[in-house]
Image (cartoon, rainbow, N blue to C red; front, side):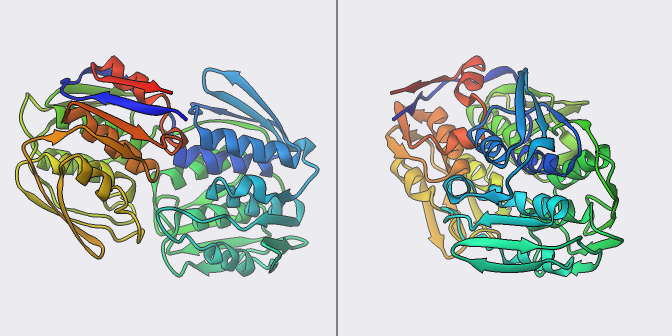
Length: 418
């Protein structure tokens, strides 16, 4: 099994290109099932979760072509199955996002219930309720969500809580529903906007994406299209934090600063000098130690839960004491015990962590528990004295494209080992 080895102490400098967003490309790939012809997706990152999604599409019968340079074309005209099997869905919860497209396009879908998730419960009942609002008949039998509808009907649906995945699933289904659908209390993440823009390129009629109220006017069919995936704001934030922690100066390119307000504000509060110029963000720490910053996660436009672990790594070596509140997932402090192994000073009380910054961390063997936790351990390793070995990095490969190569190009002493 592969591991990541980091020898800390290097100050990062240079430029790094941001890949396409994991959290955008997965629903967009699922959305291709709605089209009558091939859909070409650009800026597709090379990630394990992308490969899994492509396997799901291929299992359903779609023809998927990897044209290189981040270009993937999906031709759904050959889809012959409406069943997403457990063997694939269990490895990635986002596979449930084929439910809405299959149901809307073919009138029938059987999708395995996803398996467990290390960072907490992400129930699919919000997805099911949304489909039922559109007129679907749904049962859960033998571990499968079984859904039927001759044609979905537009309706007003209010999500019980803000859910990115449920918003995406119901949004996709509504594009082919008869009449007008209004989604209230919808998620507002940039990835939702990107999905909507892809659907619009395919012929969908959507208004209000990026707000809590999305209106969809159903159409008879969606057609072939091209779309380029939005930049990954979480990857961009991770590299900026790496620069801030090491006291360096790094420019992330091909980024979208307009999707990162909450993160950029916290980096400024930590003492970083930031300059945004088009799709470039430059962070200059000028060798200073970062200041501790308080964090409370919240749905967009609040502070993203996917950046909580990385900011905790920063706070571990920052000047001062920080209070970090996690409001989205109940088990998202699993990286704390591993950071403690590196010498961090963290106290947990329920959903709140109090982090007292220390002068230095010390390298040690640690274990990744989820995707963003693995990134936080790499960040801590960059500033730790000595070597840090990170095990179970298959979590990392789900959401970061060649992170060790990109950090190495910035001057980090980091490599993948067997």
